[in-house]
Image (tube, rainbow, N blue to C red; front, side, top):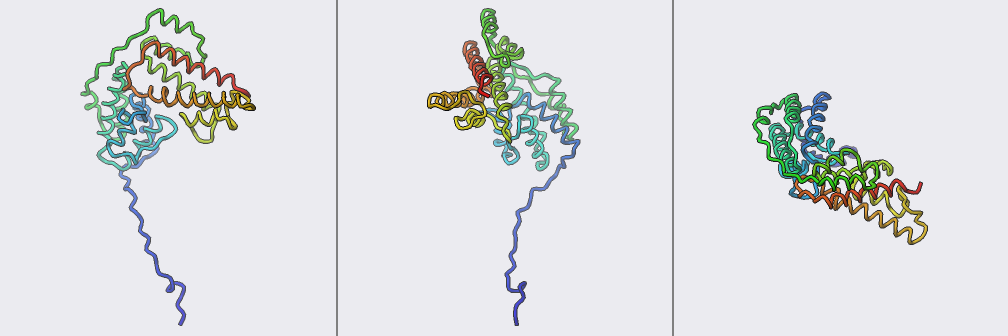
Length: 291
């Protein structure tokens, strides 16, 4: 008697891991509130940071053992929105305490930059949290505002010297000049290199969003670059292209990334002018690229 194909094969038992239980459904309306909340929080909290012990949403996720809910997205607002959405979905008792911790640390982060978090922003955060079912207005009202760090604005002579320098138009905009004039040198430098990075992103136009040193390595590569500074037909021209590539990669790692962290000591006026000048120089190189 022949065994059927069914009998001749041993049945395999497939063991599936239980998926985490969703306890908070993200509806379209709730998603809108989460995005609004992320937008407000992005003003007082960086999503990622250069230092392992510096304040950021990513490091806070590690500290609270919530790293599996954080994943880098297209920008800071999307990073925070993605993280909050996941925490809301799976952690019933965490969202309220988490947002309060972000706000408390964010207030100190802004104070380190010489700024005070406005009550109007705290009210908007409370409004979005209440819409999601987590009232925190009372707790936010009870928070003490840390004293902002004392800034040292530049002298009139330095401001006039800054105005007279031939900076690239897209770098020297009113907001950067205002930051510099008020003594917020780190933020002025950060914005300058952020604009350089955005300029490169727009020209490079990669299929997926790239940023930082990886973006610079590809955009200024000596092998089929999207931003060609030289024809790359001789060794000297290849060397120049490589030099610009390494310079662009270096400033992303040594200047742009560190200045995104509000816990870094404020640089002096001379260093700020030099670095904004470097961002301006790199923007000019991109503007003069070979087409």
